[in-house]
Amino acid sequence: MQQDPTSFPEMSGVTTNFDGMDQMAPEVAGVALAGLFAFICIIITVIFVMNVIVCFLMYKPLSKLPVSFRPFNPGLVFLMLIPIANFIMPFLISTSFIDGFQKYFGTVGDQSNGDCGKTIGLTWAIATVCCAIPYVNFIAGPVAFICMIIFIVKLWSMGNKVNTAK
Image 1 (cartoon, rainbow, N blue to C red):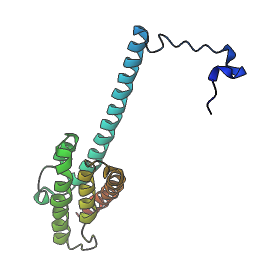
Image 2: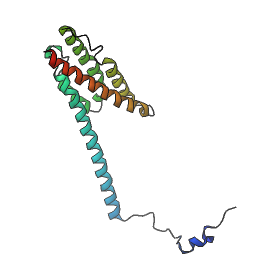
Image 3: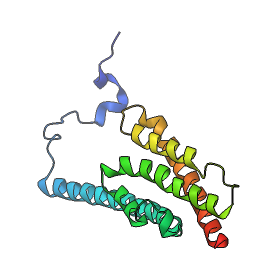
Image 4: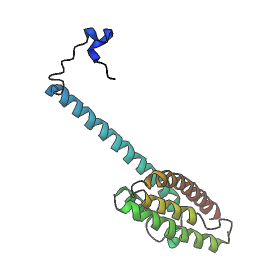
């Protein structure tokens, strides 16, 4: 049994004429659109700055590796800022540079680093690629973020060992 909404005593003073409510004043619409655009620009800028910081945090320890053990210039880490290259660079970093660290530590006789973070680096790279798959990204995103942090910490520990081994 439905009741007529106008039969409620509380509703007696409420107008039910909604004509013209679907139209917004052009000035208000322009301000709302400008605010939305500014908000999106701020979010994109913050994400870009965070990516630059991540690239820098990887660049510093990779640049400590002696030149003869580097597979490529550490500055190429900043290619992760380019949309498609950010799926390829984690694989190159976690395989090529880690192999360079393994060769370096093998040369100086330090075998205490194990796989030098290659496993966690490959996990980060695979999870980063899986972030492009819908619905899988809900699991792969946090996994990639956590593995990236662990990988950066491992890079810094190896970079510090390179400095002390010289």
